[in-house]
Length: 116
Image (cartoon, rainbow, N blue to C red; front, side):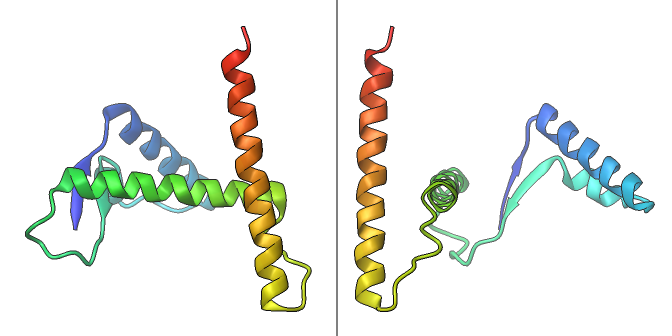
């Protein structure tokens, strides 16, 4: 388990969201949840020794960015619904969509870099 204290602003934003959610559902908020809002806690199956907390958090952030990229691809290119009947057809269509996404990203970056 890797705990990290969150910034005061982030903790307060989480507390506000918790209070609103509890109020909208007509429930009382457990004070322990308000206290836990100060921390980000990652559960991992890594051994206790041998990994620094900062390194684990950095890998988590990178994995989260990859998750967000695939979520964006699924919503924009609809790669979560492949209208093919065979594994080979699905793989071909998926590769084509991923290549298209990479080309679009590369071209848009060139465009943004050249824009005044």
